[in-house]
Length: 179
Image (cartoon, rainbow, N blue to C red; front, side, top):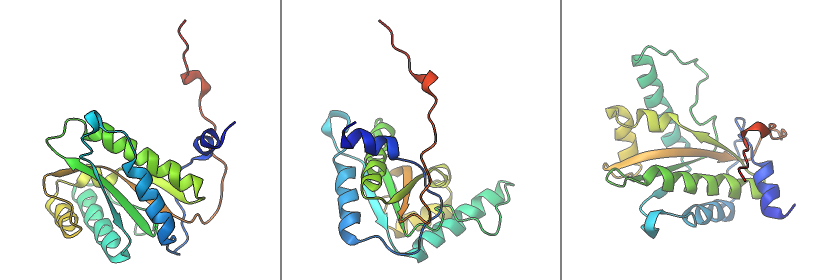
């Protein structure tokens, strides 16, 4: 198996991170991988925002937690939407772009594979996508420089893993070959 296929097979979700910040050159490599993703008609409209300030990540956590509690879904006191990862990557695209979900998802997959290749843990985070239109959350997104007309496609929590665990088995019955 070649190196690319090995990286794909090794990719897994990490939900326990060391507090140590990843090296700047590693973050830059992951961000460069993100923008190498394909985009519809090569328009390249999706953007990635790297949040490394824990205060902003905590502000987002508090805003998201408030939204869920207002919806009647109580989160535990230990809740942290990005699992205390030292870096949160937010991928967004203009709301008028009908292909932002596909393009942004390709960016996120590149992020996950690049992180895996560097032995950095990662996890897809959806809570921000689901709460982004609530004023408290949108206010923090604006503070981060995310344009008001952008919709969050998804986020990636990234950082050094607290513990290495094997990737979970994948259901082979999902493969269908039609001849």
